[in-house]
Length: 213
Image (cartoon, rainbow, N blue to C red):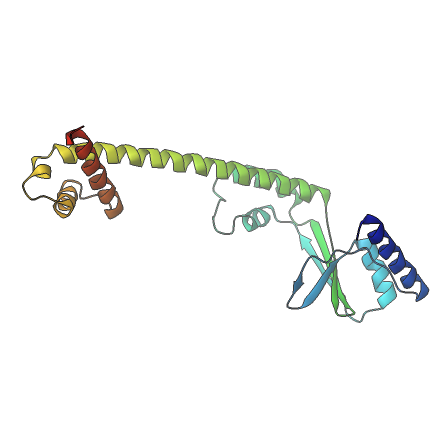
């Protein structure tokens, strides 16, 4: 089947719909969930569907804008309200608080949920700023994580040298267990994973320094 076949099928469908007086909607069927298909249509087509299907129930949701709430919805796991960048965005967009920013409607027809959603242009602009903020915060997080990892590696190197410099490190019958105990004694404030990393680094560095070439 090629493009011409698809076009032919679409035209056949339009003709069949016209013959029986059916309303033809340009819809999107993205998912088939537990409740069946969901068809997304424009608001103009949704109004035509209401007039055609004459449903008993139409669902309508109008959303009032709240800058702080909209911002928080994009950061469900983290509270960023105290960040200067977040405060700046909220201050700029607070003038729209209370204004209608989004309208959504839905109705069931032939077992399919038809829905239409529209939002203001300025809400799209606001969401664009949020996306930019998300990108910037992720970049800052990556930089912080790299800096933290570099600082941790530096600490491991310095502590490993200190551990190797202790005379007990190379005492008789000293293995990994005793060297770990020595590291815990020398560095009581460090967590166990860091202690293990220090001991491993010290053992490897000691082997490289003393093993015959």
